[in-house]
Image (cartoon, rainbow, N blue to C red; front, side, top):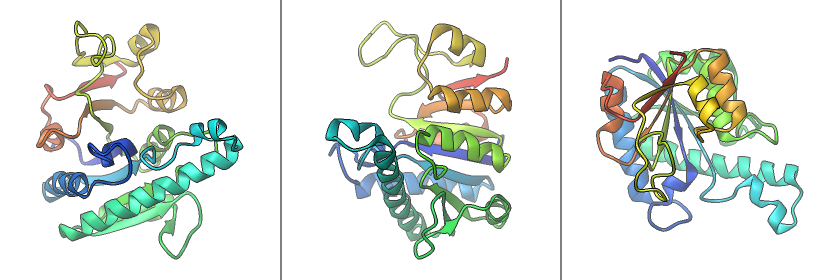
Amino acid sequence: MKYKRILLKLSGEALSGNKGYGIDPKILMQYSGEIKRVMDAGTQVAIVIGGGNIFRGTDAAAAGIDRVQGDYMGMLATVINAMALQGALEKVGLFTRLMSGIKMEQVCEPFIRRRAVRHLEKGRVVIFGAGIGNPYFTTDSTASLRAIEIEADVVLKGTRVDGVYTADPEKDPTATRYTRISFEEVYQMGLNVMDMTAFTLCKENNLPIIVFDMNKAGNLYRLIQGDDDIGTLISMN
């Protein structure tokens, strides 16, 4: 396998499937099967999952809720998704640990870097919930930070599109996909990959990002094997 340890970033919206909200059990089991295949191949897997299918902190203002309060609500939404994913992963026979940026000992461990690394070394899937425990930071920022802390080889951002395009492929049929692109080129062209905090963290720590379609069966495994035709690789060079 090309990568020994990965940080897989999943969007909360993806868990809702075609329903547009909530959690679709079929998507959960599909993701679990993909992750199990990678784990069986010997790759260590850590996961950060968003909460947009339940609540977004940025939606708080529209509802008249204080932004900080809304962000904490969004963090709790990520824990709900993380617990659902944990249950699905264990159903397919994997050992897991759920670690939270907010203390809630009844359902998950507090995040401790050395403990997270040890879980990975023991062959457990580690899921990071509740962001980094502070408002104004997205789950993209959480993914970048946790990946750096556990010394992951790469951040794999699973989305519903198969990479980074010159324009939004859902709006512009002439948009073309990049197979490789540098951090500087993404900055210069203003491409939307991650929020600026998350993206800068990866750039400053020379941590590559691959944006790919998680919903296509086999894509995750092919990426781990080193298939360069999957998604878009963003790196220093």
